[in-house]
Image 1 (cartoon, rainbow, N blue to C red):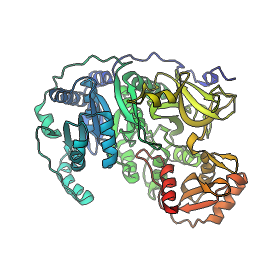
Image 2 (image 1 turned 90 degrees about the horizontal axis):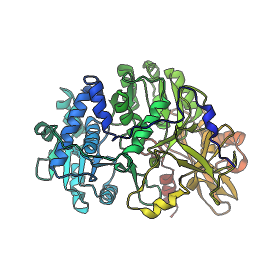
Image 3 (image 1 turned 120 degrees about the vertical axis):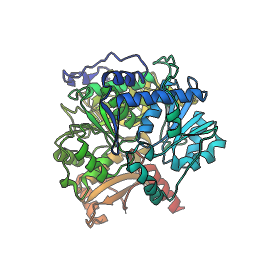
Image 4 (image 1 turned 135 degrees about the vertical axis):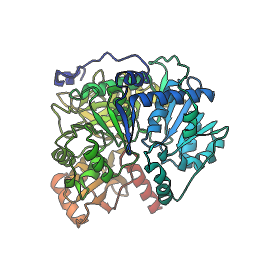
Length: 559
């Protein structure tokens, strides 16, 4: 049986295997950054810049305003914003007030929004002006008492702030002008009339929640993951340790990953504040915008997802841009194809490695070394103080080396549990191990490999087929931009393998060619029997392909 932490011998001397984590509230790091880097720029947003001192002062103003509204320790504050200064200020201001942040996807529809607000019991929401009509409509079905409304224009430099409403009207066909009232609050008005004299709140980092982060809800309703201040502080400090060549106070981080997703929140927002790094905020993913920003602002760290890197690499004018400032990227949320990794490193001269995590672990648990040994196809090794093992899916005993089972985690970044769901919490832990729902194995050197989600495994004709393995093969074909594999019902085999493929622009790709290519690289039972060519694949905001949505679409078609 595997008991030793085999991966520890792989650690380079620059990375500690164990860290003394700061037992203090997450917002303390903003206070420290404002003291150490007072005038240094903390945020860059579409031409507007704010210093660390600006961000801290405005966060205190926001905390004071919340307290004036009657918000007390433990109350939930929903933030429904894209990456923007208001998102950062609202987040840290809520924490300063002793509240719990509920990150809310601005792409949510009414039903999703009502569920999350009602489940979390949020009393206040900060939202964009264009979302105000929807939020005010659902307010009656939730515990919301106050809506704080802001707009992208609020933090744009002149003359962009004057032009933006016209752009917004053209893009969304809507101009919203809510007025200040007892339950509706206008950000710009609020910030002008509020001082930074908030009342500090006593926080116990290991016990008190900083965040309720809702999982995607691919099975059933989304669950609120309870993350403490200590969970988030420890994971951010692990991230700092992993990026050992990055220099305190000298880096610039590209914020493309949405902060309403825990991956962007930890590896961009919290890391930048803790690191004294400048954050470049991009409210949405647009490859051309990213290329322009990299060339102009020279970011050094670029956490992302495979779809983000693919989008950049497939841009027709890629070679016109200088991307040489990029030093390090950790890719998460989906498997990183080798072809994408190699091309991106060639174009930037930086390092791109695959990591792994989940909402329940704040989120990162494993990564390959940015500067050190890495293995393609592996998620790398556990981060400092993170224990990981493979548990047999039936007995829940530790599996042998190389044996496939459920990846299971222990560590300071592991959640407290699911909000108001004690039974689901109990089912997710076995003997102190957090069950990830991912199937994988560990090799003799302590490197871990994910073969697939437990629920995504396809059983066809009695054979276990892991979609990730088939996807890797499809990504190697020069005519494939994106691919995802799913199991679909089959009267003879029980399930059969279906491939959803986005062909490269201008490439004539057909089923026969892909079938021949797959048969060269895969056992016959793993080869897709059905191919569907599409212009794009449905994705989450962080770029994870929604396999379950594709399966559901097929079910609707067949009924």
